[in-house]
Length: 378
Image (cartoon, rainbow, N blue to C red):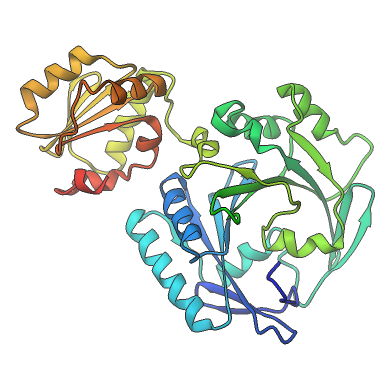
C-alpha cells in the first residue's frame, strides 16, 4: 500500500482527529486516516481533488451506506515520514473544508475509531480470525461471524449519468442488500483523478436462498456493471483502509459527474425543484420573497431566477430591469441549455451575474447567500 512500508493492521495510535499507523520495518513510513461525516459531500469534492493534485492527500474514499440510513463518510489518508508534516497538511485540509461547508464534521477520538473499524467490526481489539470461503471472506470477532463479498463496479457505466448512482443505490436497497459502496479516489502518474469502486456486501449468515447480486444488477442495467471479486485474507487491510481492491481504475472529471445524481434536488421537474428550493431557504433561515413561481428576491440583495431551458427573452428582461441594483443568479436546470447559453455570448461576463448549471447549484452553500461578497466567492 505505502511503498516499502509494512504495517500491523490492528495496531494504531488514536489522537484527536487522526489514526496513525507506523511501519514495523525500517522504512519509517507513517500513514494516517481521518473521517469526514456529511449529509451532502458534493461541495467538498473539488477541494479534495485539489488536495490530491497538490500531494496533500494520499487518497480519499467515499463510503455510501446501503441502505442509506446514515450520513456519508469520507475517509482521507495522508502519508509521510514525520508526524509534524502529516499534522500540518491535515490542519490545512480541515481548515479549508470547514470554511467551505460548516455542516461537515471531522470525527474525533472514540467516534473516529468506531466508524473506522465498523466496516469490519467494532469488536476488534487486537485482531480477528479470518478465513476464506468460496466467494466470501469470513471474519470472526468474538462470537460474531461476518461474511464479506466484494463486487467490483465498472465506473464507465456510471460516468455522465448513463446509469445514475442514485438509481444503483435504490436497486441494491430494493434487493434487500446491506453493506457499503466505496469509491477510492486518487491521482495517477499523469496527474489525473481516477477512482476504483466496489460494493462490500455484508451478511451475518449465508443460506441457499441468497440471490446472485451480480446477475440481478447486470440484467437490470443490461451491462456488466458488477463483477464479483475473489476476496482473501490479504484484502482485510484494503477493506479497513477503504483502499482499492483491484487495479481497475477509471478516469473521472475533476467535478466528478458520477456523484451528482445523489443531490437532494429534483433537477428534472422545475415545480418540484422550486418547492425544494423554498424548503432549503427556510431551513437555512434565509429571508426571501417569491416574486414569481421561479423568481426569488433573497436577503434584499439577490435575484435568483430558475429556468428549465435557455429563455433568453426572460433573462434579458431581468438584466435590463435589475442588473444595476442587485446580484443576479440564473440557474438553468437543463445541462445542454445551460451550455448553449454560455457558448452563445448573448449574455456577457458581468461581475454581478452568475449563471449556474445543476452541478454548480449542487455545490452551492446556502449560508453563502448571507454574504455581501457572494458572487466573488462562487
